[in-house]
Length: 303
Image 1 (cartoon, helix red, strand yellow):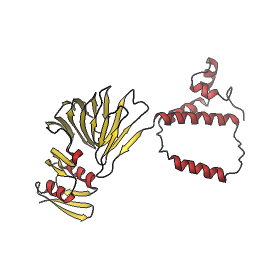
Image 2: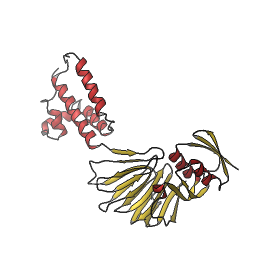
Image 3: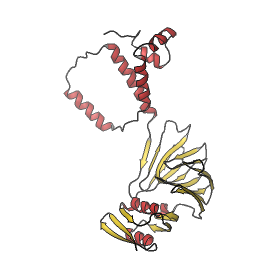
Image 4: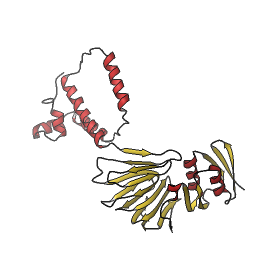
């Protein structure tokens, strides 16, 4: 089989836009052109796989020790094409690697970002950002809750499923879960934006904003730092659903909530040190009984 193109560097020159007018025209009119365009488009949609260096190295050693000499029946020019595509994939994966930090039940984690900004993750939360473009855009993705101490500089953006926060340099807390978005400003000024265009707020120190059940709310607080940093979760007129979710993430438990109204509001706090005390603190004032169905599941019933 003959190489249908002028030389083995043809595809590399095409990708680098180095073909002359004649070569380019002939290639674009060929049957193969659309195939390679499709390949490049597919590469752009790929996500970088999790890379385990030790596992892959051991696998390569085993292959080298057990393999015998193999005769290739592939034409030389097809090997060149494959090598070119591997280079494309390598470049894509290198520049699209994300750094990810996660916390488990009852855990907190402090992360220092590349510009010296600090993020403290609450339990069952995830922070993700791309190091390769950090200097151009200070942008992180958050699932869960975190407290941010942002160094002054260019725009700093926190992206979440339920909303977005934009700042220059300040301290603020973000709690973002499915269908819930809450931002409290502890220093400076932040812009909080829900997924709807109308749900926006500019917050200064002591101001808070949330979107719960598709309704936007504003309130004020005099706390200088989030309570959960010191082992006590605090709520201000918060839907009971979010309070229960906080308990689940803190103590690794689950609740049967079929017999209560989770839209009820709770104001108060609970300690992370003792689960029994936390349950009493929240549910006794709300006249909700709780029964352990097993070690990790609790049934709630309105009295």
